[in-house]
Amino acid sequence: MHTGRLIFSEIISYVPKYEFTKCVTKYKGNYKVHEFSCWDQFLCMAFAQLTYRESLRDIEACLRAMHGKLYHMGIHCKVSRSTLADANENRDWRIYADFAQVLIHIARDLYQDEDFGIELEDTVYALDSTTIDLCLSLFPWAAFRQKKGAIKLHTLLDLRGNIPSFIKITDGKVHDVNILDELFPESGSFYIMDRAYIDVERLYTFNQASAFFVTRSKINLNFRRLYSQPIDKSTGLRCDQIIALANIKSSKCYPEKLRRIRYFDSENKNDLTFLTNNFMLPAITITKLFKCRWQIEIFFRWIKQHLRIKSFYGTSENAVKTQIWIAISIYVLVAIVKKRLHLDMTLYTFLQILSISVFEKTTILQLVTDIHETEYNNRFCNQLYLFD
Image (cartoon, rainbow, N blue to C red):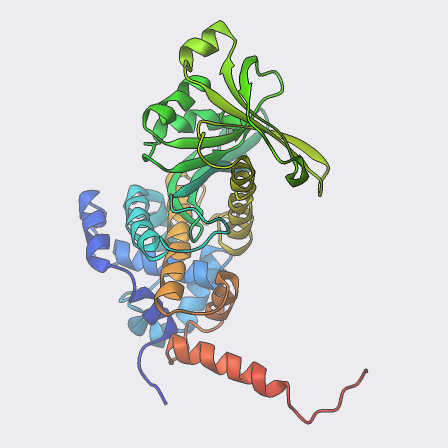
């Protein structure tokens, strides 16, 4: 029988602690800290994310119940909710934001050859945002509407592995299109976005950087058709046009040609119109690329359901951002572990197993193997069936 590390310790062993220390040093996270270091804070919050703890009191109660195993988890001091609350309140959230970027860089390297449904060698990103509602009386800094608070999670998702490559947390008032100013387009990459991001001046910066965008066209788009290309209507295509913007101001902001593609979605009975600056890919491939944008909606739904980013352990801006960035770090860390161990299961299933096994003394591979063997053996049990 294996009597080595806990499952939690094995997961944390994939964390590049040297890089974490560099992030802490950069923002002086351990300045005048004697006991509860940034590393202890990260471990406690990681435990909370992996096991779905609901509150600081919940974290404290569970960890104190397992006080004999805290040392083996890497936590070398007593955990109390007041200490953890103070750490979340006062220690710079940028420590965990920078460290999340370190993990993202590792994960993207691991998933760079992952298939996302379209045979395309270039990198494909989906850009969108999701709103997290907050109580305005508890979170007065998160202004959104007159009687409602909210924050926005702006995300650029690499579709190979569904790894977020860029994340920015803002208050709910920030319009999506402003995030285009924060991006540095990669030459040859595709950026898929919805109509909220249509700003011809900003989109022209993508064109100048030799990056490609695919977006939905607005109904009131003023353009003139230069010529049309042949299409196969049996695929759902209705037109494939090369156009130029007709509005004087728009044509100055975007003086180059654009490609306009109309497509009828027979399954949902929708007539869709796309704009892109790519003239080489087949029109039907452009429509399939935009369909892949749905993966970012699934990502948002997934992290809201399976990570603790809707109920918060603190009410200050620093505490909220700290919790979100640590949640993202754990999401990426689990994706790294899954890839390095070549686990043939979904991320959801892996997280569910980890949530009840963090204090087990076994290896992750053994844990997963035992589960598969149990499922296999149960198929041939001698138990009679109650119903046919």
